[in-house]
Length: 207
Length: 207
DNA sequence: AAATGTTGAGCGAACGCTCGTTCAATTATG
DNA sequence: CATAATTGAACGAGCGTTCGCTCAACATTT
Image 1 (spheres, chains in turn blue, cyan, green, orange):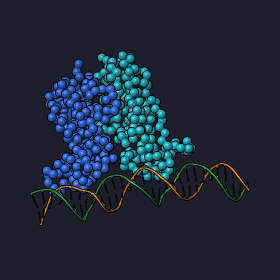
Image 2 (cartoon, each protein chain N blue to C red):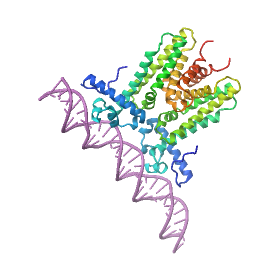
Image 3 (cartoon, rainbow over the protein chains, first blue to last red):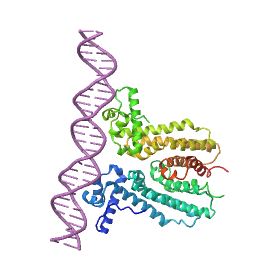
Image 4 (cartoon, chains in turn purple, green, yellow, cyan):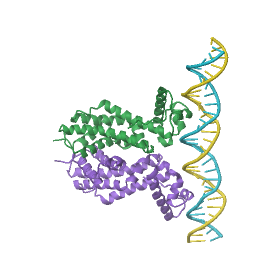
């Protein structure tokens, strides 16, 4: 999939990057507080440290900001995952570590993850599939680990089951983010990770 | 919790109910298509079959419509569940049936469930806890079934595990609703129910 | 039973305001 | 001084909300 260019006419590359980063940083903090729709372009400009006029030098429409934000958040999550997780080893510990690490990333970036979940649908028909695809890439990381485990005989699952299981891990991770209001009352993050890992894996491990 | 009255001054009870129902029906169909924020009060009025002026005879603020819609959807889901599920029996089949039935309800009301998920956050600080509480009531239904199963020795879980497991069932049901775009490509509803039931339960059943 | 008064649901033009977007003017840069 | 970058006042479409009005239905008076 081609990286979607927002506007970027004939401006200095370095500056464009810098300004976009300011925008994304400012916008995320606003979206966390008030959501995309309640945030005005003027607020985004102010939070980014420049004027409304300058904002529109670097985007075409307000929605472009949301696209940039979602794009960034996914990259952030995926980068952290890739940096810490071994998808090739295919033993039970790798899987447990991957789950635990993923849950911790969601915890650390909980506001960002929440923003994406709640606002992604506001993206146009153009950008949405691009963003959803990034999500599938992350699910695919878990699929890959699971497949390697199956190859190594750690447990046996059909291809269908692998895919569903990967989705489950992914969603139960998000759950820690988007159901905080209920879960934090009951568990610490560590307890959550331990219990979920147990509930998820006890069913499939060979005994 | 006291049922929150929206306005309803000294109007004919029957008429108020009828008009509210028209509103809810019209609004749901619009929210499904365009979301709460993109839907105008005039559109809601038109879809309800009356004028913008009349709409405001039955609500105070646009947000009131969203509240009514969320309230209705939860009641709808819970009613269907209560009507079909036995929470007292406490054997494995009841649990499996409950899970399967819940997933089917989510499937049937997928648009409505999606609306709630995506728009609930737009509710004010007043109404949101009221709606979230309704969600917990539904989770509690699963907790109850699980507790009965534990009592009957079908499997053994700590109280912590019961609560988490109930949340998992709840969320993995919603997942069929809010991740249709990915899941429908892979599974039919029946396959989804069967596989999820298997993945969920194989880990906890006594063997 | 006709004339008159009262009620309140329904209506939609109009209001005030917000917000996304533009662009002529200004400032910084090299 | 030419070009790039920034600015914010101005614009105008669109929004939620209001409010003075209509009119059928019903009640009261004559």
